[in-house]
Length: 116
Image (cartoon, rainbow, N blue to C red):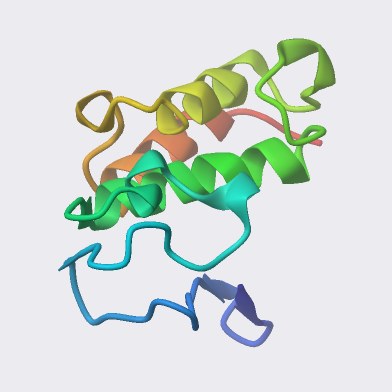
């Protein structure tokens, strides 16, 4: 993650697997930290795309707002954010948000009205 303080913008860049768009996993297990990797990152022939990124964002939430597990008792966010994380971290690709844009909309809805 790269944070631009002047623009208040976070960019996510995967330097190990950078691609300008979706690609097919030709390696089998891709490189990276397993705690952030989607199931398709272990499967040769699987599509790596926005749905994969949604899984990774869910895992980032599990680490930043919890202890890296999906357990509610370890999660410091609201119930709505916890549900968003669970939805993002499902192994069923079809059940996840299909784009980062959709995930961002769900995130905004989950944090609406929340103040720290």
